[in-house]
Length: 127
Image (cartoon, rainbow, N blue to C red; front, top):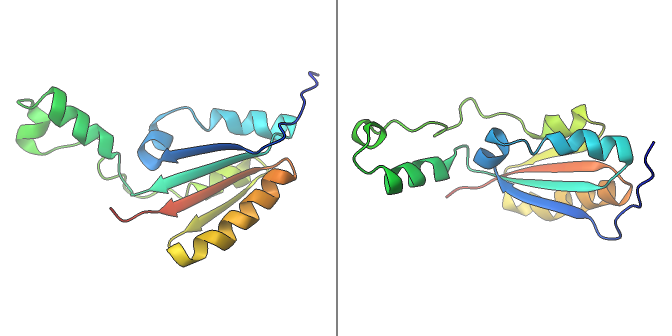
């Protein structure tokens, strides 16, 4: 095996749910599990891939999606429980739906990361 030095500070990824849902970010979960790398992923979850709509409107203002108001990934339904993905890789995951619950959830996640585990917070946002 390859010996890796653990980072001194936590590795943190803050990402929207659309970007998380449609990109290969979860590929890092297996790496984190195999090598004991503490990784904190915070998913800002507004239950949709908003940039999809913005980019289509900007670059294709006369396109079919704009005319029909049909947007891929907007909304993301049903809403996945992203926190369960962390559990599948030996990490901890937690869905946070109230702002008042965020500080305690973040403290739990950082404790897991300090122990060399993956932690994912699925934080609902209300744009």
